[in-house]
Length: 390
Image (cartoon, rainbow, N blue to C red; front, side, top):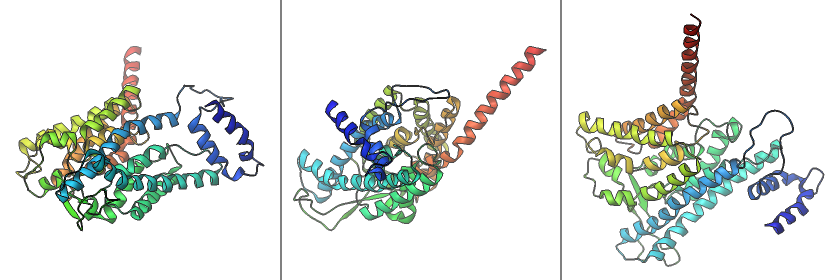
C-alpha cells in the first residue's frame, strides 16, 4: 500500500489546477479518497471527527450485498437448468448466472458513475460516493432478462432526475435504485410486475445445456395473485430456490447482509425490525378479516419471505438519506412501509410485489414524520416548562 501511496503522490500534481490532466481532477480525487482516508482536516467551525467516512460506510453496504449477489448468480443458473429439464453441477450453474448478471453490474456502474464523474467535474466538486451502493443494488432488483440498453436508460434516468437535480448524494428525496426499478415498471410493466420472470433459454459459452426459445415462470407471489395455489415450499422460499429478481430470493443471504449492517451500525435496527413487524401485523389482519383470495390468505410469514420484502426492509428502507432520521420516526416509518407493502400486494392483484411502491411512498412522508416527531418533543418540553414554573 505504501508503494501505491507514493505513486499517487507522484502523479497528483498533474491533476491539480494548472496540471496537464486537471480536467480529470474529480476523477483522481474520487479514486484517491476511495483507496485512502483523506489527510485533510477542517480549518474552521465545529465538526465531528470520526475514523470512518461515507465511502467506508458505502463499502460496508456493498460487502453486505455480496451474499445476495452470489446466491442470485447461482439461482439464475439453477432456474435455467430446472426450466430446460437438465442436470447441472454447482459451478456450471454458478458460472451461467455469473455470465448473465455480470454485464448488468458493469452497465449499472459505467452509466451511473460516468454521469457522476461528468457532473462532479462540471461542478468542480469531489465525486459523490452514493452510487457505489446504488450501482450494486440496481442489478439485484431487476429480472435477469432485462435488456442492457433498457437498464442503461433507466439507470441514467434515475441518477439524473432522482439524484443530481436534487443536489447529489445526501440531497435526494427518493431511493435512486427504486426509481430505476419504477422506471422499468412503468415503461415495461409486463416484465417488472413481479408476477412472473423469464428464464433464459440460451446457452452461454456452452454452460446452458439444452437451448430453448425462452420460458416464463410464475413467481410464488404471481401464483397467489392469480388465485393459483403456491407450489413452492417454505424452505425453498427461505433458501431462495424460487424464481424472482436476481438478489431478492434468498432470505438467508439477505439475513447475512442484515447481520453485517447491524453489527457495524450502518443500518438502523429500529427501521429494519419495524418493517417486518408492520408486514406481519397487516398479514395477520388480512388472514383474519381479509377477502378469501389466495394472496390475502397467504400465511403472514410467507408474505415476509416472498418477493422483495426482505431485500427492501434490509437494504432500501434503511437508506439513511431517504428514510426517517428521528428515533421515534424510524419506528413509524418502518411500520408504515411493512403495512403498505402487504396492502398493495393484497388489494392490487395486478401488482403483487408492493415493496417498491411502499418504500417510495414513505420516502415522500419521511420528512413529515420527522417534523411531527420533533414538534411533539418541543410541545411536550414546553408543557413541562410551564408546569415547572407554576
